[in-house]
Image (cartoon, rainbow, N blue to C red; front, side, top):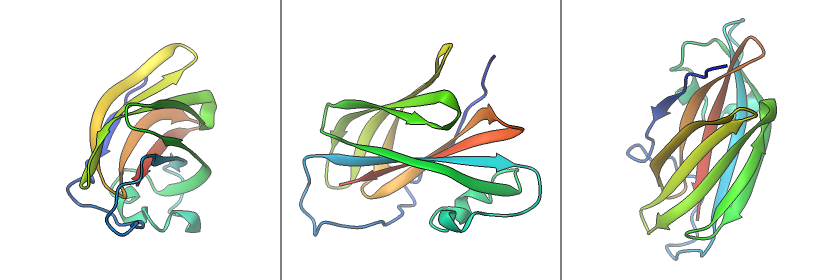
Length: 148
């Protein structure tokens, strides 16, 4: 099965503030991956998605439900595989990070292999969104956060 992925938002330029450690750099980048199920049924946004709701509403879907939150601490030049909804995995590699942003490689895989391989810059304590794999009559939307 072929998946169509779209890298939707480069929020590195918008910047979504989550928390700050006062200006110093933590050695580890805390990466969080949310699995969100988007469908065209209705117009309901899960209350747990308030932080990203305005960005999700730009998609051509009406309802958004948070399925799970997963994450890992990743040191610079480190890599972790994170299991997500739908039997898929996301491998995140922190290539580098500075006071402004982290450059990360994101690989999404299913049982057939890698279906997305891209490198992005995420504003410090910000996120970006990837959407695309089909899931239960809709798609999975994956906000990916980098906090350090």
